[in-house]
Length: 361
Ligand SMILES: *Cc1c(COP(=O)(O)O)cnc(C)c1O
Image 1 (tube, rainbow, N blue to C red):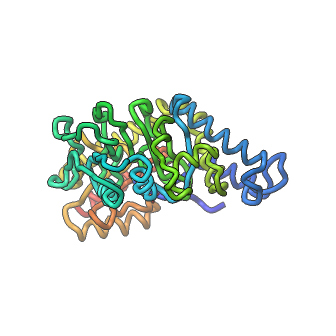
Image 2 (cartoon, rainbow, N blue to C red):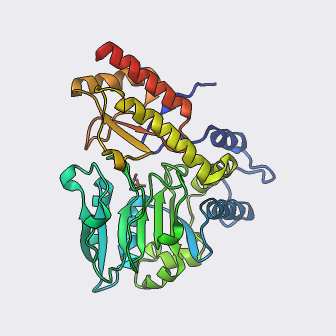
Image 3 (cartoon, rainbow, N blue to C red):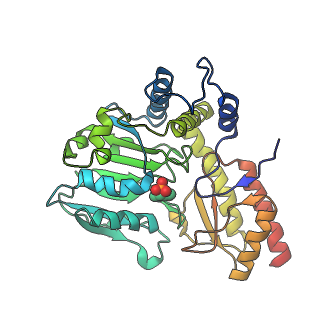
């Protein structure tokens, strides 16, 4: 048995070990089916059960009301940058976007290709080191929707409470913090997330959409980009990512067995507090996000200079702590502590950081 190292990658990211073990055990033949999940039709009863169970577990976990549809699509969160405006931004209307970092910026870029976009708030002048305060938002009256990024994977910031959007539906890119804590679904019109951070493997995109918004999807849209079509076909208009949905389903089962979103939130807070505690302990490490905006999922920090940072990456990798190099656009370090990341890995990183400072500080 090969030993597993600690995987701090921002995504695709660590999956729960029991999920990998179950998938490995059943890969050749699903119990009672006699064929691999990789071999069965997406229209077969066994796959329908896998899909329906995954959706039921998601609904249960997050308390998603029955007037929201749960879709499993493809194309990543990046395709949602286009699908959201194509479906929800009608002619003559304006969509508000809150610009909190690189992913928000990409969402804005794609929406501008579709229609009128108003940037309702931005923290660009602070290097995206914080989430805007409520008073900084300049919302458009009658906006088609307001788009936010609940956790900024690259900059290491996260929203602590949702923005007030009045009657405009709130649309959230929750790719990097979905199901890391309880989520007020009813305050949203639409929530989307690429699966590869907190839900499962890459290649599945979860979309939770309030049913009345489906009426905005025009029949003239390309069929595969139409939420209404996917909703009417229960995510089976075409062949979905069957294996990805299977692993996502196992991950949701694992999360429920742990005690659900409240339980995982407590663990996530404890994990993040340990690492932020070490970052704040002396002056050697420096957190890049402002304290009140700190992400619990992606923890970004710097060392005194870039030479030390290169050395830190090299030595931590050699010590079995993989994926700590920050995103190329911002530099520094980033430790991604998603749901499946084990607490022992945080302890190991803290110990490594102390030792590194003792040797090099
Ligand atoms: C990773 C990420 C994306 C991009 O996801 P893809 O599935 O690769 O398209 C978008 N938004 C956020 C917040 C992310 O973390």
